[in-house]
Length: 254
Image (cartoon, rainbow, N blue to C red; front, side, top):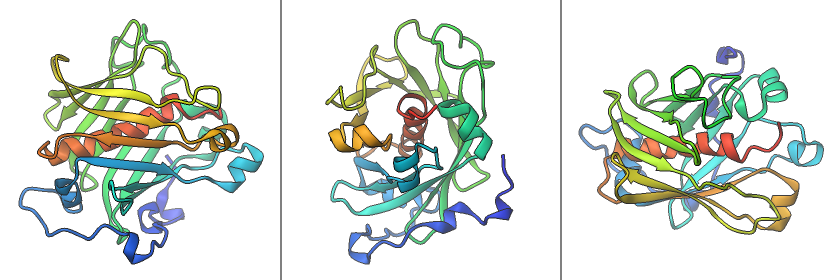
């Protein structure tokens, strides 16, 4: 990982947003990590990846940035990738990265990271931790709230959402065929299931962005839905899992 002190904390680089487009900051809640109070009021999140002009024109992979909004289109968080140049150029969507998620004041509220693993890619070779992607999630930075683990599957993507005690609480199931781009004008759903995978409790969906955006960029839009009364830390973990799903399946510039 690159030394962030050389460029400043990416979480402090949140672009300015007109106040009317911000979600009003809710009061602090006992037992809830600072900055996650927004999630107590939400049962849906919209994630819009920012189109990078340099990447669109040249195809040169830049660090990803995302606006996270509520169903009214008001921004509540901004996420910024931190990764090495060589990682982006040589490792594509398998690269190691950090994701800094900040509130509208620029305060980092969620931090997650993924290490580079060169052997990931085959659903039948990840039965152990050696090849599977494992993404620890912290809120605030340095305090683990859980992790996302890629699970073995013979035919479709699966991820475990684990709490801070490494107990599986939710499972994300992807479709057996993941098709995206201008030739596939449809959403791609990933179902959020209970730990025993018997019942759906939500969804993470990659949303079709229109032929122009799909043709010239790999910028993606996602929608996340979950129960209003779902544990706030689990909501934060589902938000974090969305960035892993985007990187693994929809980051085209390898």
